[in-house]
Length: 437
Image 1 (spheres, rainbow, N blue to C red):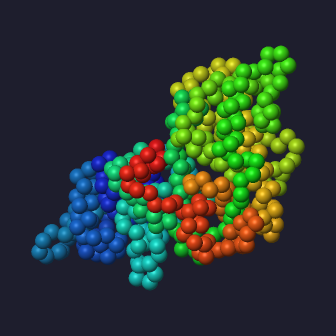
Image 2: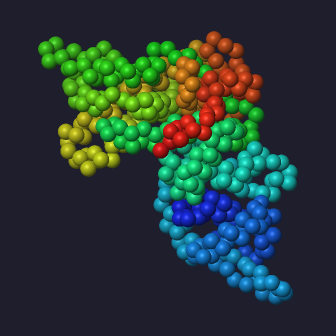
Image 3: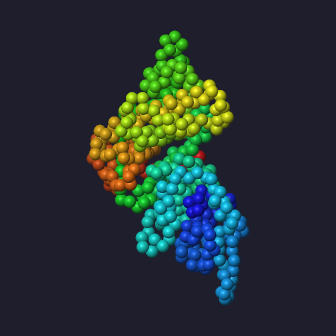
């Protein structure tokens, strides 16, 4: 029930009310009423008495809590509280798809106030609104700590934050290093529709571990900014009606003359800067999948991952066009487009795998989940964070092309910004346009 609560929208509830409710359910469950004084709840949950009073009043008024008078207590009435039938039914019927429960133990620890007496982790030292936001993100993050399913509107609903408060809290998590970086969503009427961006959580800091690991590579022939330019340029070349040759780069991506004719229309709009960032985000997501699942077999002939094609097809089809899926001609075009992006992702993954092997042969890449981090400062680095599939510790170093292995803790702040391990603080006035939609 506790994890389901983090995916439940409580209309008009303040963030501190949502946090109190989550902490209450984590500590006491939803079945039995709790006979504790407000001061006792405050100590147990690590929340001020004034905030508990405000939260319980709201929850009772909105029929999420039941309240009754405690027997045999002299003086002012004392109350006991319990989760209402309405709230329990809402949780039982909750259908919101959590990515997984990979980080459940981390989330539970964030709400565990008793640990404050012994050790105060970085997460536990956060303010309530920060902790709630980070907990919601963790509940929707994949195994490697990337949140790809929540836009700003989702986060507002799940945390009860206003737009301004949400931006401020995201900024604080970035500045404190709990979020390595994020990429905003993108909008394109022909491709992807209104796409959701991504947050890259810093699991090393959240877990209070001493070291992270990965490879930091220099871009070579698969710089995705250049790939995108080539893709749009060649798609906008008029298909040759005489010799039926396919433009050079499209041919490398496995496209035929017929494929070129089918897809040219979808690349007719000049991409905006925001859509370029989003397009690169998606290719990096697909390439990360290829590296994680197929590292050993990346260079096999005619390697095709049908699950990835299915995923890309679902991503790339704008909602406005889903009604036309039954049209066989339209379906063929979307399948061809998904195959193109699939092939580009595999090309990018092969390029990375080659560079990884040259940079650090001692890493067992096949046993790692790969996350290609954004390059926010455009320094030309391709940074790949590695997470062991077996949960065992790896080399705990970052291996840099033409450089010596180094621990993240030993890097300068400038290097962390350059490599995309942290995001350089931005002025408040510029932050508005950078939060994922």
